[in-house]
Image (tube, rainbow, N blue to C red; front, side):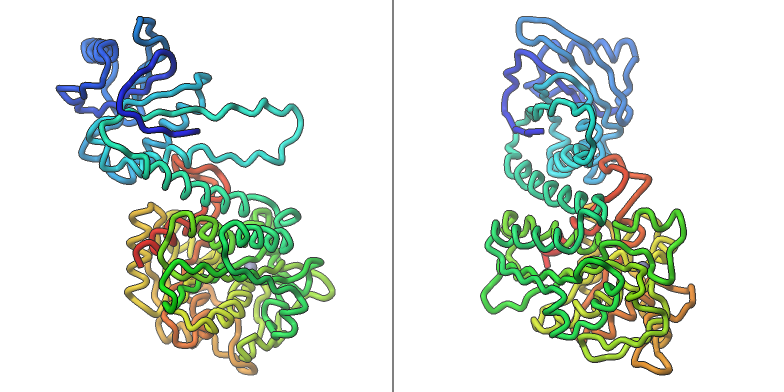
Length: 484
Ligand SMILES: [Zn+2]
């Protein structure tokens, strides 16, 4: 939909949405037309509408000023209407707009809604996401983009512009995560990265098998050994900050399909494993909008790409692999592959002498046991960065929660015959253990890891989400970069 902000209601025909709180204001804003006020009075008299959250009442009118449909939309209690609620209500109204056949839609915005207008608009736009580009058969005529005009005393044009950009990047991430591995393979990723670099003037490098072998990225290559496709690593550089300012390096896991390898995943776990590149997809989404949002930071995005498959060439439990850093790794579980590909990516990131390193990955299932599907796990070695990410997540409703990284857990990864093992075969504190592996490659840099293993893909979407990819972490990272 195309959202516009207007000062006056000069409507002749269309759908008019009238949001109202449970404790409806005694005096309605001046721009509320008389026939709307009459309808609200009627609802009050008949007690047919209480203004409960998402409650609706409809009527059709035909006067010389306006012909069309009026939908009064309940906002619930005024004092509960804050950021998060505004986003939910925005999505609910967005769905009402999409469900209607009327193309011109208007909404009278109450003064009390102004403070959280950005979130309202964001929710409204987020509700529109659809993944149906691969459906054939009787193609629906492409629906015309609806025009949605928000009538308000304030000017929210910048908010609309920003929300549109943020949601575009989010939808881009969701597309990458939702699409299967036979389409989104390492070539696809490389092509997208090059295109993005061209469009935004970013520096880009794509390493393929040849370069990775030459540089000795042993871990990334080992994970990809069973795949018919090349391993790759995408490196994007955005310079929005001062010239000599150290960059923030973000490494996103790009496991394009995770069968588990010889530690094969069972039915009901394996089917959605094309989502195992969600961390990398999030990094791509962030880069999609960094320039457009004018974020004043230097940022490097690194996405190591591999496919964890079974084959006579595939790596095995018990193999010992030399990583790009030179450290040797005993493979105790081929399904703990995300940390392996990230490790080589992190080592490359260390070379930028960064201000900090952030890692984002669907790294463990354990994070979902610990935190469910609302919070990403945040584990790192720097409290300020972790708190910054927590705050960013709170603001963007893309939440994270801290998990510990004590010495005793770190020690669990000591190997008898190599420098490190990739898993200790235990079940306790799996999210911390995954992060403990990554830390061995951080090389003293400030770092925080975002584990989206429980939040990147959902069967139980929030009001402004859809089943499938959520893009969790994307808005947290953007908000963090804006303020860090
Ligand atoms: Zn795995």
